[in-house]
Image (spheres, rainbow, N blue to C red):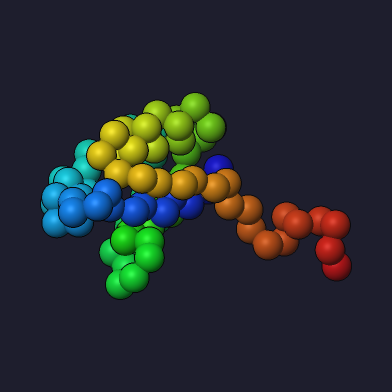
Length: 84
């Protein structure tokens, strides 16, 4: 399963957020496809894979302890079967 998490640094904590993201320990079972810092909003984005939602929740909860983030399940466009 592929997930996309957007990360917003808390007010006045941008530098601390970037430092902690650089030191982020990626747990077993999570494969990070992309980890990008962004100019503008949001401050960073992580695209990652896990076997199930439980692993994704555990990973995101670890990140969310110091930032505001939103996570979405991502699907390859070909899996949107109701369109032709």
